[in-house]
Length: 397
Image 1: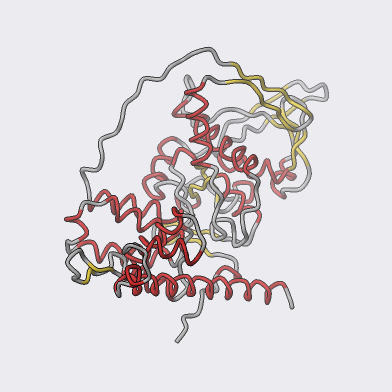
Image 2: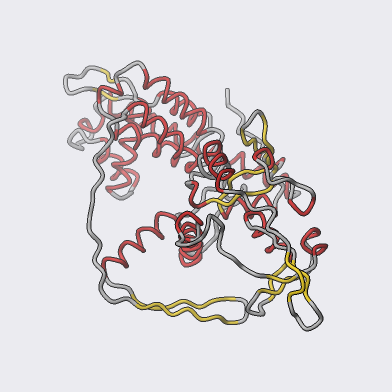
């Protein structure tokens, strides 16, 4: 069996598993409607029945019962049938096009909406749109559509909380070893809790869709390190740095123009470290290049002008267009993105809106190193996945 055949088999089995999960929830909903929990002595609780017969935790049984209710309906207190909140999501789940994480994202969104929204005319249209989007993206790809729908369906939202931070003593040590850095230190309790929550939020395992079609095998420590990278990217945004003059932070490197153009070879940083040209090529997407002529003794003989950084005005236009990482499987906000040249600057690509797209660090690497393609069509970023990602589960029946 070739790798492609094995991958097709893997996708097929995932669709089979999803259809089986949907069928299981349908049966649980029907058992609940028929009064089976009372008949078998479970005090009318579908969750308790599921917990016992499936030997699962109470929390998971409750989630299953809630999924069954919102997907396939239930009975009211007086025995009247209640329509499901997510009928379109249920159909997509039953076809194997979405998974349980998609269902939970949409379910949780529905649970946060006022009752009058769910019984109104706009909710069926919104839920159908979310079900269609879920069939094309990973669970995190629903965050932005849900955010936009929330603003339309529930514009008042919830009142934000406001807390004054405490600033006790803190210490951080940062040391370099070869081409890596070691960080250690200590934080006060409140700051540590905040950091932990931020790292947990940004360091969740990626879905296979968001990870280029493969499972996320990073360890928790590796995910937290990647999350800290996002935090640093956010802090390094020129708009957040004092006296930045609207320019990104500066990293000086030395390499030939041809090596940068071809992405082959190495570059030397200002502290003497060596990094691959491919890594510098990715960094250079959102950085200015100042051509510099050095003498034999390293003295700067001539320095050109920065010519390729996305200007603050251009970046604002990109934010207005892309609204964050433009990849369909991502929900990273604009502050955690980099401006990617679709046609690389060293290959003649211009620093203009039609040749640039906002990408988070993860999807920036993916675009550089995998077969994903991106182009701007009618003023919008359009992504073409690798051939193996374009296969959709085939409906049964």
